[in-house]
Structure formats: C-alpha cells, structure tokens
Image 1 (cartoon, rainbow, N blue to C red):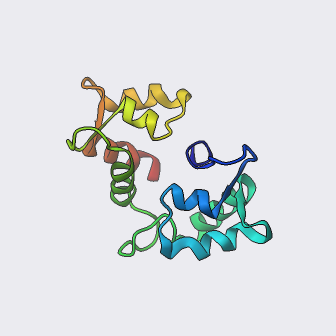
Image 2: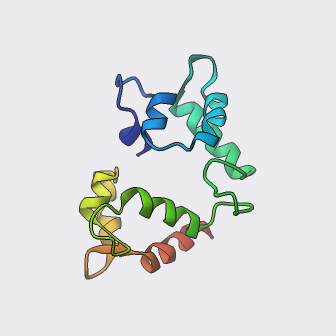
Image 3: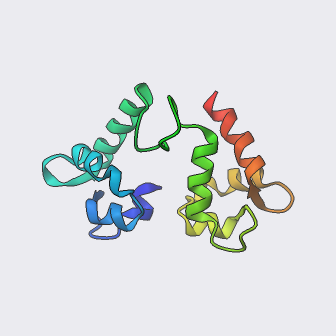
Length: 136
C-alpha cells in the first residue's frame, strides 16, 4: 500500500526521499529514511520490510508520535490515518471511496466494508476495535 501510494516516479519498486516527502514523511524522520535507504538513497521493499521488522522488535520511531512509548498505539495509528485519508466531510468517518483514494488495495475492500458496518463508513470506534484485535 505504501509503494502504491508513494512510488510516483519510475515504477522501479523504490521510494526516493522526494517521493517520501511528497507522500508526507515528517522532516524529523528524513534522516531515518536515508539510513534505511542506504547508498542508492531510495527504499525498496526488502529495506522497508527489514526496517519494519526491526521496528517491531524495538519500536521507537517512524510509526510513533513523540508521546507514545513502546509499540505504536491504535489511537496514534488511527489519528494518522484519519488525518491523511478523511478528505470528505469532516465527520470523523472514512468512506470506502476515501479509503480507495488513500491507497486501500482492492483485495481489502471486503474487510473495510465488514468493519464499516451498515453505514459503509469506518468511524474511530470501529477502527479502534478492529485495530486492537490485531495488536493483541
């Protein structure tokens, strides 16, 4: 999903620092990005997954807010997702269209709609309940 959303240059399976900046990487995390990127200055899937696995074993940085300690919290993750993806009415809900525009893969649409319930939108409570199932 990250590559689909952020890899806007050549379709080379790598994300450059410029692409990461255009995709919303905070300035304070640019050096961490470059550290993961290595000599070529771009992050490929292997480098990204390696950093994610390392982060899961020793959580501390990119996926967290300054206030969070330990593993990223569902609340923090939700806030980042809603800030990035809630582009329609400022109603605290994400529609399927907003999720698609934000990079939701086609194969995950059924899961989205299951979580969304009758109104077809995912609100904060629905997101948090689903997130907590996967974090535990």
